Figure (cartoon, rainbow, N blue to C red):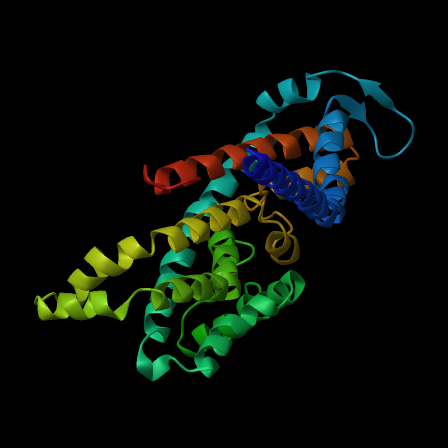
Length: 311
């Protein structure tokens, strides 16, 4: 009995020591997370909450004209013709840019995954435009596309006897021009993500499929594409969010023109908030855009995920 009592006492002591160490480790972990959590609250959560609070006011950025109007700004959005036109333009840009950026990134990744093009030089060349700023990209394509009588493209068309095209002044060409500039600028980022996914596909699976007689298309459709589901999910979500938030290229290349045909949602927020000094109304549109993007992101996660996946 005495030996049993001693063993139980030692066991309890060891258990208590382990508990104290566990509590100490937990506190240490939270202390390491605390600086990030504080910065996250200050730089992420607080602006969201503050932006929503501003959206409930008639808030002029010049003067002291601030008054609480509740959901008045949100009711105003429903009747704002320019806002709904900006939504249409944004959806048009998203439809132009998102599929081409995803498919273009996948095609480049497939090419660079081959031994002949697997060197770092090719990856650098395709990714290099992504390090440029929005202003630089916009100025480059202003020089390339130009106006009705200038630009490298129109100079080339002139030598072929083709009339120049007003890329930035024609409503039919303006948004495709912005989408093309975005494709050239950001396709390298999608390429790198999808290339990393391709290189994680086990060679044994492709070799087994070759032995079974599968051709290149069958291996891509039945093996490669399903195994790229998660990289494709990431690229799609990031691309949709980025397309809905397009602003810099439009600001540099078209200023929302011609006739407002390239005015996106974010550019409309900029106009309302900082040109017409309607900060409360601009904040309401921005918060609504945040909610829409959040719902779209969750929906895409659900769409791409399977039952056995943990989201």
